[in-house]
Length: 230
Length: 230
DNA sequence: GGTAATTGTTACAGATTTATAACAATACCC
DNA sequence: GGGTATTGTTATAAATCTGTAACAATTACC
Image (cartoon, rainbow over all chains, first blue to last red; front, top):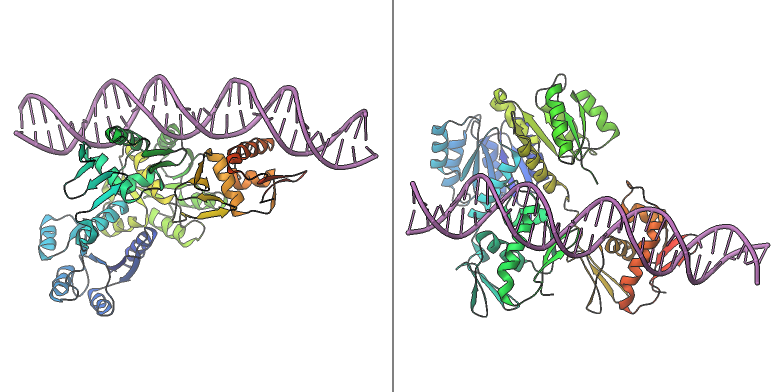
């Protein structure tokens, strides 16, 4: 299930580099050089997201969004605007017209990717993400109330430990490296030492102690950690 | 396994400072002063990452990235671009997206290191995450959970024994010399006594004892070892 | 059987990896 | 604003793994 991005950008070099970066990050990428072509492309296919340059020949970014939002089939596609200069008037204007986020050039690729993921998360149908009740060996985690309990007894977890446990309970029986845990639990924007994961594992283990279960969070030496019942 | 960084930077002072910081953080560091030399160096060796100054005599940073990305062997090497403050001319700056991240000068070494680690984390396992469930005469090895079991009973292996068994299970019924095993299981960069293989074979055999199967790891005299069911 | 070559086994020091606690910085809540 | 909770980092201790050497056992070959 690849996520397709449509890039609309008039500078060929920037376009190519963007596509390279996106593909490098696992997205599928299509690009056109102006608004006309963009609309034409959209008449045939629907991307999951649009990266839109602010300054375009012909139809400019603002106008493009206006037309997009006017079309009932395309109105829901999230758009991130790329702005050359950080003029706040422009930003406000861009957002007010309906871009879901904007990114100033120059931007760091990780930042762009992170914001794209954030927007995608926000825009995607809430689907299963709503109120999940995860269960595992008597341990139950409720995403809605943000609570964890064992046999009705509450466990006290900090926010990060909760997210960590949540991730583990969604993906038990599988070893994850510290890097993967950072990516999945902390997100993509952060620069955090891998050792920090150890500390939070420790905190999670401590919080899980009253559950009675031993060894739920297991060390996989030279690899990382795994959540499993024995 | 040290991580090698290629630094391309024309200012000798910054170059030395960078190398000092990197080595201090456990990286191995090579540096050149312009793009030509950089490409030449890349023709001979492959670093794990490139730190690239944006303003360079001759081939500039952008052009360098373009050439790098055009080369199939080098395209996947992550690049962090170093940019000076005054150079934020929009169009040109947008091009920095060809890099995996970029850092403004002046930067703090810890920040640079942190971003490097983040980029390396993300680029390292490029989807080659092979998760397979290998089976052999009741023995099963699961790379996803990083576990080995016999008839549901878990076996306890150390990291090297795990890799060794993994290799054997992928290539059973075939004899390998100690040298070949070193290459495949340890990696071909290390120099280790061949007899060390014997010791690990011994450890693997011991760990496999509770499996009930006799003679899974077989000695092929004057050749090496073979993994087979008798 | 004797001998040399090869492999098995064990112990151990050094290296690597993980656990834990303490600390400083930050965010959060009245 | 003051106090509490949370977070990330670091230092140090503890656990575990590794490679090597030394010696024992086995095999091959004459």
